[in-house]
Image (cartoon, rainbow, N blue to C red):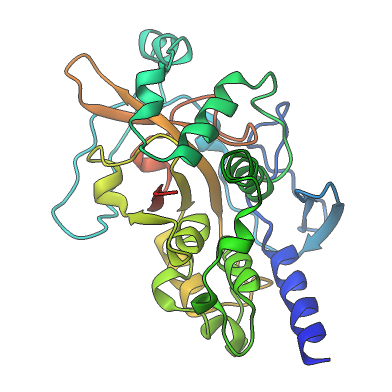
Length: 303
């Protein structure tokens, strides 16, 4: 009975956490709150289940993110996990944009990952006829990870999760899924998961499973990411900190995004100016730049 209640609770928490990056190709990142002030989010799970939830969240203005910024070389501080943002103009830069849209990624780029699963993730994405399937970012990134893992190892990753991930309250799979979804809550169950991995989404879950190495903001923008790395970002540092500590999501709209790193975008001087990513079509139509999010986490796969 206790296990059944735990599973039900976990499912509920994950459901209400699926916020912030649900989109379709048509509207990209446009948020359309209803007249009542509630945001209705359609959740598409990897199993095909579709549900609509309505929560009383504040309507944050994320419209600027959908515009094409001029890419500039990021200036990072020397602090660990620097959250430094750079200023970017919102004016269109035709030359840079066209160069990025037409950029091709070669097999040599893929092989740099030194992870068969990471290589397969990128290979599947580049060969896909539908690179922007819509739906929810968590379902899409997780589905791509699971598909590649199964193609490489012959089964889903869950049977390879270490027993050490299990707690008195959760199985290894439950702990993995809760961390992956950043299923924050004020309940002690969320706080029973290791703080080091809370709020880091896919990166935290996979690193906790021993399947990769965490990469923080500074290293991400210093060129340490490998193609096929999974990423979790948060628009606001304060939201991230509250998610880690445990927060009632009905009182906070923790705006985050989950996606896969494909490659760096560099200028003529070989300086990193953006990230080419794979998501459900929310932001993959353009490169990401440092000012898009306050908090960046990733995991370089080792499997």
